[in-house]
Image (cartoon, rainbow, N blue to C red):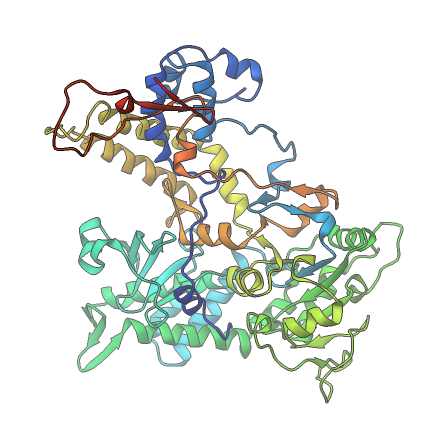
Length: 592
């Protein structure tokens, strides 16, 4: 487990949400709607003839707009709210796509680094999470928890990555980039708005290491569900009485914080000393995915002139077992090539890296005896040698030995904190985040697109309710029905993903996990093997980053600034030429 928690790091370095063209708030529709309708000229024909907006399904409100705005305004309007197809379209299948937060030219990458767990070795879901869940609950019983815990069964539809666990109140929280609470669950009870406000003023919580634990990894999924099970069990058991911060049974008090600490200890024990690794290696076919494209992919990388390295926190014995299985084919990179050891596909192999400590002070770099798995005596001080395996070390020593600069390295991993955040923040490595859940996310995004269209339509109608109203208005429009409709559609959208909703959003609001992906991952995809479908000279180009004043304002609109009233105490009824409105258009200031 990380020596430096993500909670502490993020509290010292608060996340700055990145507002990109690819992830634009639906709130931007309101401002653009009103300003565009003022243009009120004509046609949709240019949008269709240009080919840039073909095959786009427009919500009813936007269809109405298309008949009353200028052709320039309409196309710019659609670009502003990102409902059109982009100016260029990646024709690759969605399952093969790699998505871009920051532009990256593969031609400049000299070193490709890979994590092992959930990256090169993708564990089968939910089988692997269920295995971890069962082992942890057995450990909990062994340390004194009730036997009834054995009856818990893992439900993959409930947990999602990126949740916060509030150890004070025992709640699982889905929050946005700034700590605003989107969803609050106590056990399996979803709290209503007024209940959330009672616990969290302003529905807000600061990311405080002493109180909040971020469940950000795929290994955290069983832990997330077990925490919900335990809170639900103890708060609903007739033997226990619930208090604001725990439960009581006679003279015995058990805080939610102590329950969390016991679960954390049990999870660490299962991973470090328990049977998780043994169960995995004894049942590879059941728990680990195997893809014959892997040898071919790594060979192509090296043939392109780049070097490859493996950097994992796992020990050598487990790493060797997993990697031997992943490369256990009767042939090599091609069907006509002979079989090769997995070690031959990497220029450098480092185990026991202890990320994220590796990216900071690090540990002693030692050699591994590949015959016994034991560490050789002494510190390794020379350059890395092929066919050798190393343990520990630090990023400083590592980059010095391989002769790399930060931006020469593209590191591929699944851990937003241990792999991506620290390597990006501290060392400037280029980063490629693996998000297996993206397969499900894209399926829902495309299959339930009518819900997203409906939400956008409702947002436009909400903006219409305030049209032509200003600070002199005393009557408030009745938006209760619209707000209720927006809540209903948001709920339907969330339930399409699972009980806790999408990994990336709640309705039109981005989650904490989503903000971290945007901030720290240069690239992201469902699997590292998607690189197969791109040439190694490919230029990944990030979408335009638009702020609300850019995404909601058409370039063809004229900005008119009214001159302020004179500060003189004497007022002249006839305005002078200096008081005339000033218009800005195409970077030219004109006085009407």
